[in-house]
Image (cartoon, rainbow, N blue to C red; front, side, top):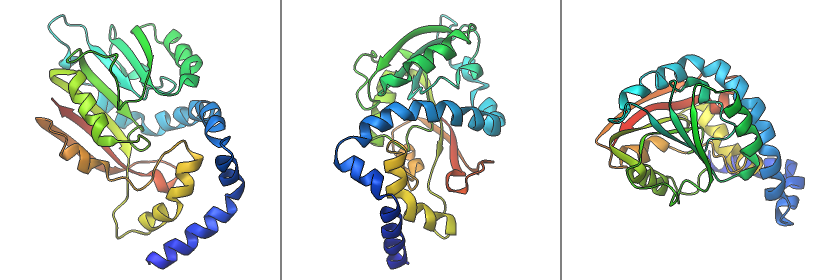
Length: 244
């Protein structure tokens, strides 16, 4: 099986040779950061339509984590185009963090359409280093389809715990590796290197739940599902919340 994966990966790499060449020349990363927000602005609409029920379930109790003021202070990690905004409760104060500044115009378009929210600021930073966000300053951190592409999941989760106040919640929804006995996992392994190059570092084979289980949260509620998405490769999902 390992040999078959290796051979098929080689075939995929040959097909994707032009992209590898652009990457070798140092051009692809710049191009990817430019085009990815346009791709995500379209993909997110489809994803929200197909996952609306799960997102409503995930976000319906956000207000319960509001601090003593009654106003929910929320940080969205890897905010992208802001497609989660419509699920947030009225009056919610939102800070957005994303390492790609090219999302800004899409993000502000979503902000203009989300008058029920109080937008605080957009911080251009990687989730592994959110030094601009103070310790214990937010009630909720939200992260959807982000942990698949970050450099260091463990460091991100440490930063999440740092910025959350005691009793605050981390809400997540991520695509993950399928069960190892499945054909889907076989093809995830075959396509993972090329997929990561094409889609801004996104990886198909991450077992993200393991890092969440060892992140030091006081409570973790996590569900594995097969998401109702058109593309089988990204159907395996986890979603839930963790409490500091």
